[in-house]
Every structure is written in C-alpha cells, then in structure tokens.
Amino acid sequence: MPNALQLAVEEEYNHLEQDAVIRKVEFSDWATPMVNVPMSDGSTRSCGNYAITVNPHLNVPSYRIPLPEDIFHKLRGGQKYTKLDLKNTYQQLTLDEESEVCHHKHQLAIVFGVTKFYMYLFGRTFTLHTDRKPFLKIFSPQGSMSVLAASRLQRWAILLSFFRYDIKYKSSSDIANADALSRLPLEFKHYASIESPIFHVAAQQVIQHPVKAHQIAQDTAHDKTLAKVLAFTQNGWNIRECHDPDLKPYLKQRHELSIEQGCLIWGLRVIIPPNLRKPILKELHWSHPGVARMKSMARCHVWWPKLDADLEQITRVCLQCSKTWNALPAAPLCPWTWPSGPWKSVHVDVATSEGKNYLILVNAYSKWPDLKND
Image 1 (spheres, rainbow, N blue to C red):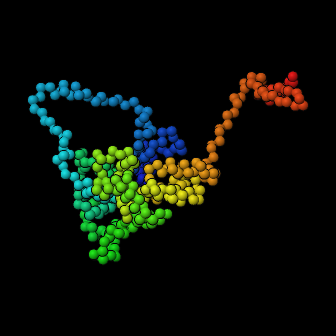
Image 2: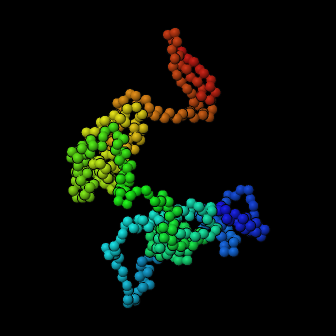
Image 3: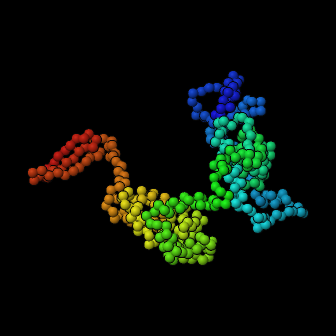
C-alpha cells in the first residue's frame, strides 16, 4: 500500500467497522482484493475488486448485441447517408517513423518513472517536467485521450490517471539532470568524429577472435554468398534478387546486419566465412566444455548458418565432451497395486540350486513364501 494512504485507509476501515459495514475475520472463502481510491478531502474510498471472487458466481442477464439486419430494419426509410472510405487513407499521410519511435520512448520513460516510484507518488500531488510540448496535451490530467489515438497511448493515459500530477514544459537544457547519461558533456574536439567510439565495441569483438579481422574481411569478400550479403548490407536488400537458398538465413537477419572493418556483424557476433570456421570450432572445443557451453560461448561472439549443428557434430564424436552430457533422468518407480486379500496377487520366480529347479511363489498380500521343486 502506498505510504501516503496508509493512515487514511486505516481510518476508513475503522469507520466502516464501527458502522457495522464490515467486520474482521481470520479467514474467508470470499476474500476479495481491495482498491483504495484517494478522495479530494484527504480520505479514501475502499472498493472491492470482485472480478475473480464473487462475479464468476453471479447470474447476470446479458444484453444481446443487435445484428446488422436489426440495425438496417431500424434505418429503413432513410434518405441521406454518409460513407467514409478509409481504405487508402495511409497513402495520404506522411509519417516520420523515427520521430514516432522517439516520442514513444519518451512517453514510456514517463510511465516507467511514475510506476517505478509508485509507493512514493501515489496519493501525493507531484509535477512532471518534459521537453516535449505535445506531451502536455497527451498526458494532461485535465484533458481526455482521443478514441482514435493509438491503444498504447490510451493504456498509458489510463495508467497515469490514477495519480494526481501536473505536467509542465521545460527545455532540454533545463532538465539535463533527468537524462545525465545521454546529456552530460563529452570531452572531444568540435571537429573530431564521434562515430569511432560508437563502433568501438563491435571492433573489439572482431579483435578478440582467433582469426584476424583482415582475414575475415578478405574471405568474406571472396566468398560467393557472403559477398552478396556484404553488397546487400551496404546498398540495401532487394528481396526480388534473393532467390538463392543460401541467402535465406541472412535475409531473415537483414535488419540487424552491419559492417565493421569489412566484416559482417550480426548484433555483436561476427559472421565467419566457411574457410575460417574450422579454427573457430577448434577454439570453442579446446577445453571440452560440452555442447551447451560451446553454444553459449559461440552466441556471444560468432555466427554462421547451422552453427549449432556443427557444434553438436564435434561433441558427438568427442569422448571427453560426452562425459559432460547430462545424465538421463531416472525412470519413475511403478509400485504394484496392493491386493485386496490373500492370494489375490502372487510374485513368481524360478531358481536353481545343486542341480535342482525350484518354483518360488510369494503371496503379495501377506508376503508368505511357497517353494516347490521338480
């Protein structure tokens, strides 16, 4: 329960108990979650959420939604109608996808911050500061969200409506403390390029591999399939030209491919040409860590089609790796059904001793043994 509401909720429950509206119990089959709504006078209103307790057991009459035929019957005799054709509306709108994504990230940051400090903010009045003027309208406590707005925005607006807040505009330079990691000044010269530090992480991944970056770049350019992937990544993918089945694994990841020092990178994983895959496999298999550990290490550094299958093939023929395989699960015990009386069930076995054969019977109910010989 939010800190600011604890005293008010306790007073509300005490008042309800004094008026015999509620009473204390140790246990109830109909225990219901409570929702405490703060009021303008500082008190709270306690409401029960019966959606998962009482409501499923209620017989509530339902209203039948009218069929189109019923609606048309009521509209009979009409003379003027309006038809809105929105089929090709999207073709008339120019959308800035990058701007939309950026706006949604900033909106999500507001929602995340408020919900993160729910225990401190709920029940108190606070002020939100933003450097985006459209947010003053979107998240205004006094305004209402348009029914045509994106469902994501409607959910966020409903979530914020539970809080008491004001929202004000501040320029980016005045709220730099809200986003220090991205707004703190960097020590670099104005004429220097800032792209090198951005790709520094990807470059380090290339350097750490057992083969050199120039070898990977050289073999990538000479490989028939990877050369096409390299060209598509640089100039854009034309799906109509990707009929080669060898290109399909790369086509699925085309939006995540990049180029660093002439090497193809998928995320932070270097795509290894066929000629250099054997030393990479040897490096992964060097300490015989087992197939699961080898796959985990490979997924942090390298990739090529059917990489997992190549790793499984190595461990399949390696005796040392087989020792790290997980043992098969033990078969569950299946006890005999307990008999209802004597000699309803027996256990039978055959034994040989000193050239004689014996038939052994054991009563499953009393454990009485019986021995017969030939």
